[in-house]
Image 1: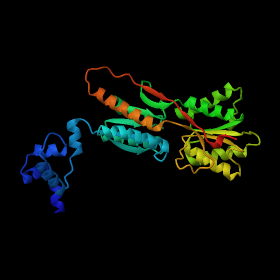
Image 2: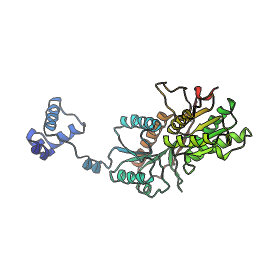
Image 3: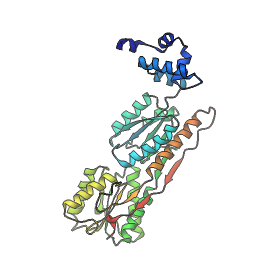
Image 4: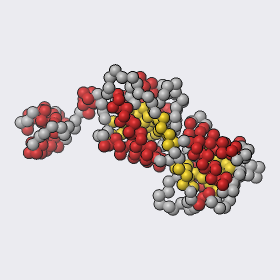
Length: 346
């Protein structure tokens, strides 16, 4: 029976049920009126033979797969998880599905997934890029496939759609908060300056210090890769050189690096905030079990996801209109939020 099920086509099932192929098609696609009795019979027949619609054939006919690809550097980060939920909430209402890929901060893996998603005929792409080689993106731009960037913005020679926060302002807010709470010697652990997130957060840190006439000490600047182990190693370096380059406050540019830094501080038998006042970035603690609570810069992740999805839907609608000029791309910049808890208040 299993082999028989696999061999049954829509035409075969229609013949056995004594209905037209178009009737079955209407049931499969949930379009046009079909009597409840006929619908029930067709659905039972489809279930009997494990019939699955040929999505490839349908997408070729419709010129749409009704799928959106998302490529991010770390699926385990709460920041990206919340953005994905926001995207899926809006796209789901429009009957779009998402295909998710994790580049693990690897430009090589990112390129692989970009090509794979393109081969699978996605309708649009959401990308948090970690690469400096944008060759694979030319396939999307050249074939009018909408691309919306989040988090890190590529250096391209044409306008792009993106949804981000004001990263410089985020750092200014964080450093100002530490200064207002009695800190002048402030260290930073930040991402790569070759990415816009790392570069802009570092620039905001420097601008805040300069505004308060505090010299920038390059020895208090450490670069990580957004992972916990580099937050840990960077914090250890800062602590081991603390006698020569003292600091009483630290600002850390990602959730995982914040956790790594906290681990290093505790291993040195130091207390937060008594010994070191700390501000993190994108730190989530819904349980409230982290002690002390971590003061953090928060991004409106869910809002970012919803805005991204709305922008994709807008671009897909525009794409259906022939003979019109290319739409003006949008750089949507949202405001960061400072969530104050005990880690920064003595």
